Figure 1 (cartoon, rainbow, N blue to C red):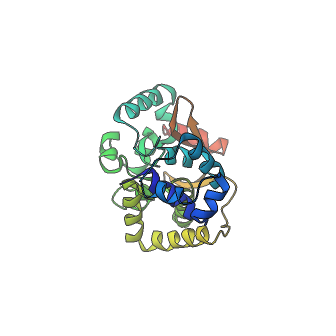
Figure 2 (figure 1 turned 60 degrees about the vertical axis):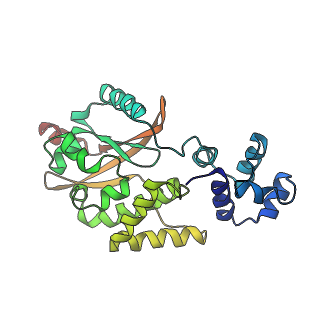
Figure 3 (figure 1 turned 30 degrees about the vertical axis):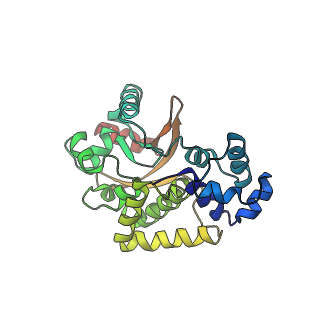
Length: 260
């Protein structure tokens, strides 16, 4: 069960700071942090703000620590954002998917569904809805892997695991995170890459991740380079859209003839 004390303890240990040292940094009395982490008392808003600042938490981590995102987005929020999405984005002429703050797949464009080989959105979402992006990439039954050029699949999976750890790895007590880790360990390839990511994180080592947001898709049997962007939705801050763009103008024209 997720508690504020447990979350503070996780972030403190991740920062490799003792209770005594953190108490010093935030000006708290001796033993107060132990009582907070054990759940005996709750910190004041001022104390929590000092802890956030002292541990150097980013906004996503702060929201999780404070309890704003300890529960997944609601059905109502998902309904609102998907209605907005289909009114705003041309689903039949774009490659995109929608993810929430837990990196769970919520929706995607008709083009991606078509290329993977599904007859309808409902058919695909029955298998992939609310699964995290690493789970979707790993699960051969979903079929997303066929979208990526085989040579670059490992690189793509590694990058996604790296960013998943960076952006969701603090949700240690979340059921979706825990289920994702279980599925990662079931895949020899994903498990090996995950160990590499976690080892580097634990030792504060830098990993080489290419700066350009590029990926290679198999489209109609050809390897095509696409540039992708990640855009948080202003009115729905717990969601972001990941969109892919064919760089080559000639190829864009050709694929448009096939309604891609």
